[in-house]
Length: 89
Image (cartoon, rainbow, N blue to C red; front, side, top):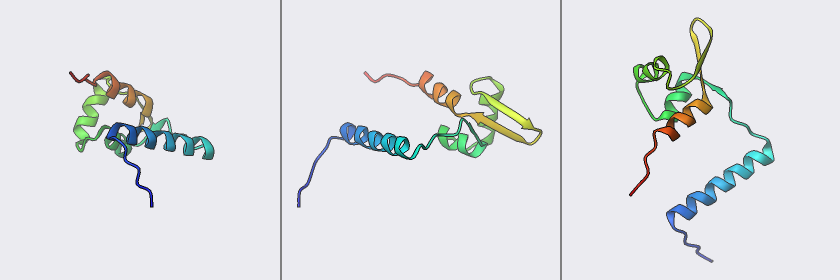
């Protein structure tokens, strides 16, 4: 039995590459418009109020095709997270 050791960064890079190849092979695409629950999970928040504040302030894009249906733009959430990321020292 062989054991392969990888540093954390190399391991996670490998995992991302595997995920990307699986998506390409099976033509799996992420939905552009996601539900509030999916948006909260992606943002790693638990408060609907916080999600509404992000929506109301224009920090993330949304669509409201019907009165009680609100969908969030997945790409705008990614952009929001990237814009608010901080570099390490």
